[in-house]
Length: 279
Image (cartoon, rainbow, N blue to C red; front, side, top):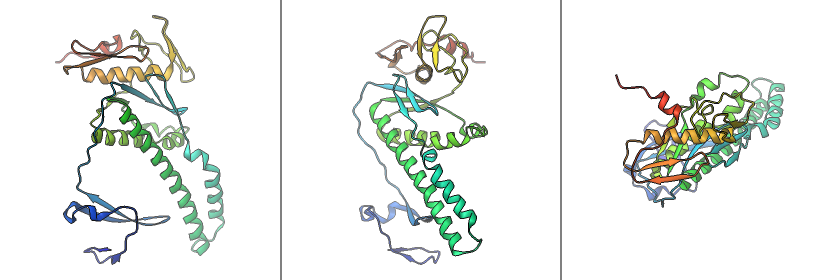
């Protein structure tokens, strides 16, 4: 049990966490949060977590999407689970039941709680899935490159807003950066401009519509999945940010990685074109 200085009363805690493991001075803040399925105590603890990880020699770029949650530079695609879409029928049914109840009645409170628990279940399943996926990506690579997407601006597209929110790209990025700090793996966010247009093999621009899912370069003949080509460009842009370091890494169009002890990372023509001289 614990009590606070705001006269909220005394609380009895139940859970799987052993708080006696931490010293009292490590507990910086405690918040009581109400969810649709009960009350929860949220503890902020001053504790440094570091995990040891063996080097894998692998680096990857991730191109997130709606058809597939992400595609990496080796062509591996992860299915989009679409948690909200799968439970949308059940949620709509609960919403109809809520609309039929009388305002201020006990039945309305019960219907509101059932609807809230349904949304809470979807949110928890989604968060658990992206958390485990992000940890797997970090543990499998020594460097991860992602796009710095403006999710808020993308949600202005009302036709895709629900699907984008259901995909939880930003939450996935937060977990990547969190586990990256724990395992010592750099997570680099790059600008998404031209990643789907530029050819990852020769650097020339190949204009495509959203319905075109295959990248075909007329200049060098390179053919690849559209998302794989973008993932390779994302990784190249991230490596360009690290081009001033001693050890460099190069990646070719097939997704294979070459480790170099010296020299500079090979840049595509588009990357060279976008670099501006210092004033």
